[in-house]
Figure 1 (cartoon, rainbow, N blue to C red):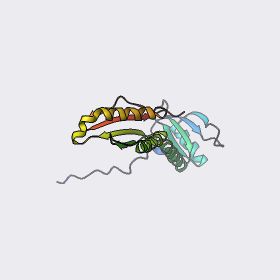
Figure 2: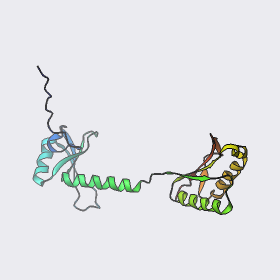
Figure 3: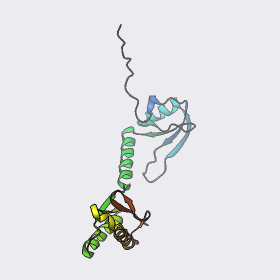
Figure 4: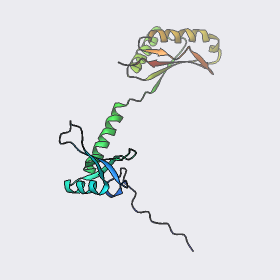
Length: 187
């Protein structure tokens, strides 16, 4: 005999609405007529009374805080409610700036002009809120001159001191010497 999958019906909506609300008592809020005003509290109603009030107003009963005691529900058009949530998510995503790590490669024999170009690039990265990793890579016999690489990275950190701060002294990692510079907080 083959096992049959039991039908579970449609998945519940992301927010409990209308008949999906199971609580007996609900704290009901009505949407304010103007957008800049707070919602109007209607008090604690039974589930049946809240559903009847929603039906007579021609809107949905949406549970906004199911964890509260009693759960908080709002009388609002569900489509409009979802639109407002999506709009709020987009605004939050737009406001959040993710910090990236930008890497600048230097040679221990770098000339003054090239060094200044790297400094300007690092200033631009730090001003936009990104972290900077300055790297000096040594090849073969160049490993004898790690002291010059240390001086170079310290000079770079000093030049960028008004834009960011170092996360410590330059460190060797294999044949690479690295220093990390984080941007100063914006006010």
